[in-house]
Image 1: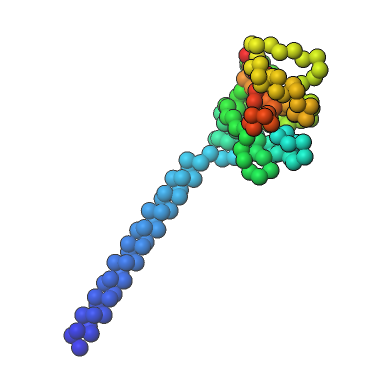
Image 2: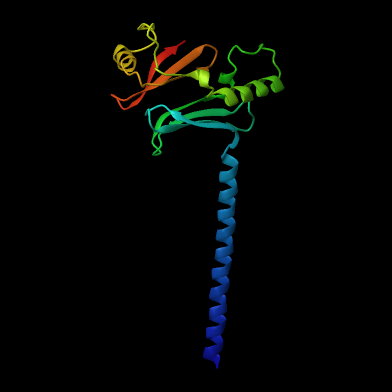
Length: 190
């Protein structure tokens, strides 16, 4: 009888220890989850479109998203992904770069926020894309592009250019080079 009692007490002791450790472990895991959630910045705005870019027959996904605590102090990520999920372009910059010189330097927080929202919403407007990527009259300028890249894109009538303004004066125009199998900058200024 004493042995059975000792076994039962021992069993409950082990179960109690195990349950206690499990509860502590759950608490620790919950603490880690909460910490990670606090470190993850909130998605504040996004815009996604599909369009032909790297291929004349298959559409790519263009995505811009703004994360952070506030729209004016957030971070913008711009990504282009092929239909099969390969990221072919990725860039990031502060949300304030979407304002540039567009607003008076005394613009308040509300005006800045509304302007950034508008820029995110219009980022992929049709006017920002061009096919062919270069018009017949465009000429090479070594200050803004590289000659082999320029020649490659200029010779491809199916190439599509996408242009966007960041910062105060930085205009970037990119295209997908089928020859190089990557996104290239065909114009980058200031």
